[in-house]
Image 1 (cartoon, rainbow, N blue to C red):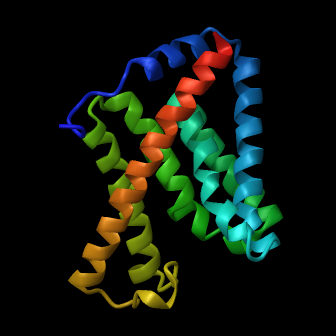
Image 2: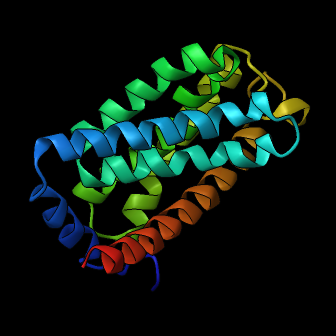
Length: 186
């Protein structure tokens, strides 16, 4: 079955390639990914309309940093939150609980798990916890008026289906990006 197949070794080979870089180069990569993530996340507030389509792409830089190294992923996640405090404070509640958390979770799970379903599930669980926290604890309408801020099993099931498919999409995107980056480096 597709979900039970282990991921390719390209992620681990790419981590070995990046471990050969000096610490200065790694920190430069983290800072570049942090700036890209902050700009993409802030686009939702700065460019109404098209910015809302660019905002979910802020997952990719955090995901890549976390795939390279979990400490660098956490560093990029934290620095992006600090940059958003300066650039677009209104996006500050969205990023740590949704976009950034998904990138951090999927990227870190590449280091812990080998099966595709485990990586997808780790990202889905973290994203679901983030969305449920925003909806039901902070009463922030992250999904708009479509989902009420009072708990129901129907809305929780719908959210879980959405986050599972969304996490699956990002896992596949990450694998494609790694294949392309590996071809560029080697």
